[in-house]
Each structure stands twice: as structure tokens, then as C-alpha cells.
Image 1: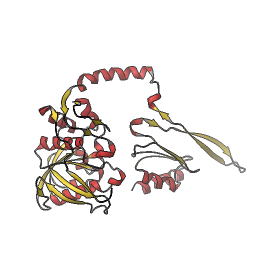
Image 2: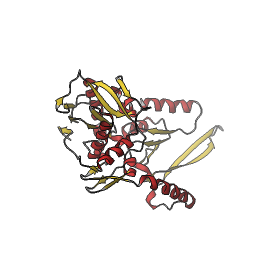
Image 3: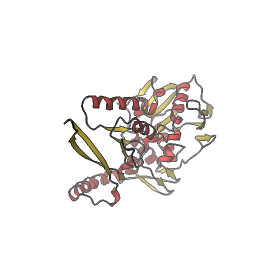
Image 4: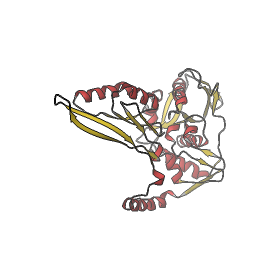
Length: 327
């Protein structure tokens, strides 16, 4: 558990003689607030939410940088080492915050020259056109983590096509370009590798419908938090009600034109991160793995090949995921 583990580590650090305890965490703001309230830390440096934040309650300093280092939040501590009336060492500090918008920063010339050289080499292999989209594509963070996305459909379709699976299933949090593409936009290898930067591999497993349902429930269990586990799917459709308790939100699950059969075994194309339980997808484990991470293709390559075969993208948002109840 993130909070309990972190607080225990902070207390142990003080017992071991630390004067200042800095927690470096990758967790959401719900946990961040609990860590701040614990007052076990002097400083908390957090990530995960992709939003800029600073706070100081007189005991604990808190900062979080934004997505892709667009806005940075350095914090400086001015530390004074003194002594009390008995001669025992004292440590006092005060924080000061800085805000850096990296769009306004003049790059270091030597570093920029290295970047330019790498960029030139990358351009030769990445600025290769693979096709044109005939429909709008959307990979914005608030979309791929909360609703059906045309970009998510393309990726899941490509995974299913590459493996011949009944179902394609990927996590919206792994789709990262955070942008839109207008109809008529030319897609390049760079675009797809920007969308899928983690080097995940397409894998294939066999699972009963009951576990697929459990995986879907996990996928929508934290949609209100914008969690990256939200599923983008192919070969299936489902509805969910975010106002219902987590674990009982999913309904109307169809595989092809048939209702999901909890006892039937389906082939599922997913990524190696999810198959190993990433983003809470323990339900995807335990099945017969037909293609493992060592034998699968890079997801990005599957998507590039899928688009390049026809030279176009024609599938948009088509009702694979339906929202019920209050938003």
C-alpha cells in the first residue's frame, strides 16, 4: 500500500538519523494528500497526475511537475544548522518555490547540438508516411482514459489483426501523444511511436469470459480518477456506469454479435504490461499464453503495419464503449 509503505519508510529514515526526509513518489493526488497529512515527510516530490502543483502547510512541502516536463516546479530549501541552549544540533529550513515554463527556456547550446544531431538521424527513419486518416483521431489524455477513442480503436484493432484474436484489449494510459488528428492528416511512423512510446509488446492469451468481464471491471474501476487502466477494445463492446460501485459497473458485454459467455474461452490480444498484472489487470493472468512477450511484436510495429497495409484509417468512434448513468 503506497501510503502505509511510504510513511513507514519515512519514520524509519528519521529513526536512522535523517535530518530531512524527502519522499519521491509516483502516485495520484488522493495518496499525495494522505502523505502530506501524515507529516512524516519534510518534502514530497510526486508524479502520476500530470498536473502542476505546489503546496506547503508549514510542515511538509509538496510539488508535482506537469506532463512531459512542460512546467517544472523546483523547490529550494534554505537550511540552517544551529544549536540549542544545551548545545544539541538543530536543523531549521524554509522552502522557496520556483516555476519554470520550459517553453521559454533557451536551450544549452552544446546540449541542443547533440539533440539536433540525434533528431536528424531519427527523422530519416521516423518521418516515413504510412497512411492517411479519413476520420478524426483523438488521443487526448482525458479521452483515452475515460471513453471510446478512435485512436484506441485503431490500436486495439491492429493488435487483434496481428494475432487473429477474438478480442483486442489495451490500456488507455499507454496511449500518450495527447493530441488530435483531423481527417486528411497524414500519419507517420513518428506519430505511432509517439502514441506508443513504452516499447510494449503484443501478446496473446486464452481466457474465459468471466475473467474478461473482471478485466473490464478493473478497467473502469477508477475512471472518475482518469486512471490509465481504462480499456480501449476491439472485437467487443460494453457499457459501464461510473456512478455504480467499482466492481459492478460493466454491462451489455458483447463479443462480436454475441453476448459474452462467462464459461467460453476467448483469445485475447493485449500488451505484456497488462498481461503481467500492470494497471491492476490481474484478471488477464492465469490463462494459456499463446504468444508471450519474448515472441510478440512491438505494439507500435503492429499498428504501423496495420495502417500501412491499407494506407488509410477509416474506423472512428462506433459505439464500442457506452457510458450509462451520471457522468
